Image (cartoon, rainbow, N blue to C red; front, side, top):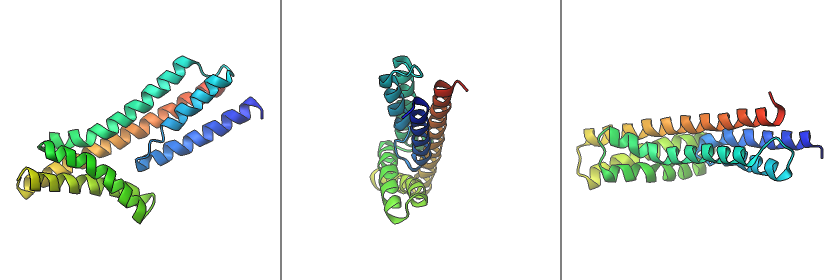
Length: 169
């Protein structure tokens, strides 16, 4: 297959993976894999430096995604148990939401899980009032929304750079 055809295939797969990354999946690593394939193929569109730039952007999205929900909870008054609840709730909510209703359920599950677990961990383990626990839960949801936005933007930065590197757009 011609080099341009491979580039198109890698690009389309990368775009799709970034789009499903909204569901909490690490879709930003597919463009990283595509960059690695381009480096190894040696077509000149990617170098090892670009590969490591892609890897750094993708890793930053994942780290930001995992930490920001807990940080949002903390910013709104959560204690350590509430921050742990935000981390666990985002993961559990995403999994349960995906099982119940793929795509929409995944996204809703992340937010519901993040709020619920933060609220419950604050209320049960830190013995906070319902108002304090609710406030911490709202903070966790806001943090998670910011994290998802960052991760989505990082993915599209990868896609834009990939298009530029492949086709010098």
